[in-house]
Length: 379
Image (cartoon, rainbow, N blue to C red; front, side, top):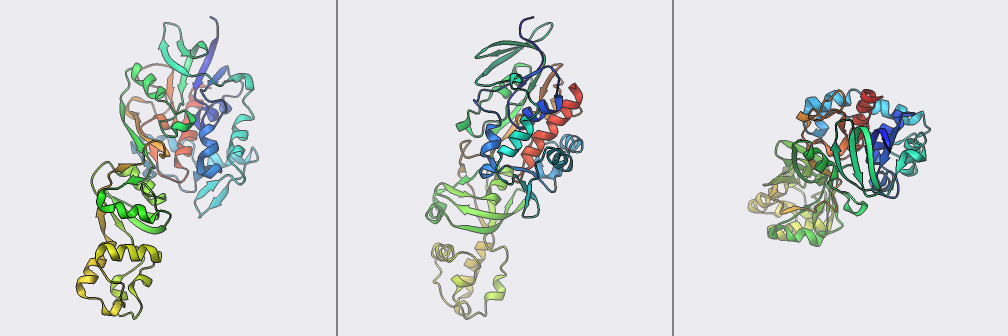
């Protein structure tokens, strides 16, 4: 049959490229709508790509914990770092936990691409649909029809539309009877209600906070932005937020009772940027006076900064989201192979699944781990 291929891999991102690199001399073809491989890798982490984390556990992910555990244990961060080192890539450890490329994300692209012959990659080719026939799959693309014994969907999610993100992976899954859990932006900033519009006037200010959303507590930096709030702590909080209120401790390292006897101005004692202190005092109706002269009512008002509760209006959307929450139900995927339980020889990898990691390299690790499991099943 014309254009008959053993395995067609849809997507030249982290999971698709890693799978191809592990298949080595097998008969496969990567198909991607972009003009270059690894488009999302190249722009992630400020161009340096946070490739993995020193500690990777199922609890760092939103999704079925047993399913995640079964896959991560097959190929963890240590195995990934070893694989990279064997190809001359030694990521830099930052903050004791985040592994970034030392120079640029191109190091990862080069490591992934060095074993993939150019003729095994077809770029500028948009997959339109996949059909199962009696003897093979038909992959209909903008550059023609391909025929394959196996199809691996590694097309990613809906985040980063500027690099052409499409819903094709979900559409393929649904066409084969898969359940796609509700899709929404993940690892993304929050827009705010009218009561918090003063946040927008603080754009550019960053401060350490502790955020409680549902039963999850996240500590890290919050960045005030023109649309609302962002920063690492907020992005992680967005992973667990659906609707309703969140609680922010803007003074995570401050015990207000200890400040009560101080002769300094309260704005200088809160341990947050002075401009932020003054803005909060104004919102709370507290004059910026000497701490030991504040009334009990003022101290009661100040305590709100330890439990500042409000409901975000929404999120910044897919254009600013790092990932897509939701995806193909993992109940319908075999964790030992990544194969669909509904269609033999159809596989799903990475972000297209209903598994989303926190900020810090977890989602790239997930992409590599799922690709490894798949490679072992089809090699």
